Image (cartoon, rainbow, N blue to C red; front, top):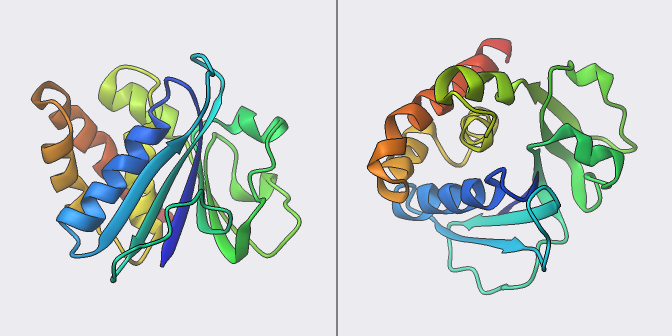
Length: 182
């Protein structure tokens, strides 16, 4: 099973990204998936979590994700107050939306840090700073389970038609940017 924890602020689309990844994995990736948020009465801008579980067999665990293989951080300022590596498995990957390079981040543990300026990509492709789909494209580039084609199909199924074209461009842009660095 692959478990992904999404760190975002309310209004940044963290749960939307988690849900779209689950849709890509289950409907278009021939897997089973769960996607769910974890938030209370928080307001726009407050820290929120989203989770995605992916497996090739039915998933019976419906609890919060406590240990994960991937952490995706949509807002790097969250790392000032949230321990994003808590529960990340040894050798796990941390994907951070930032202008900084991976070596600017020091974590206790054996983690692979990948950075991308997804906000810049979102500004270029969407005309606004909502970087969730760019981060979804970056995730497609760093994992071995869900490919970009499944994610693009999930956009067609899971987003309003008026948003699809620009979001698919953001996904492809981020995917390509990560793959060029690999």
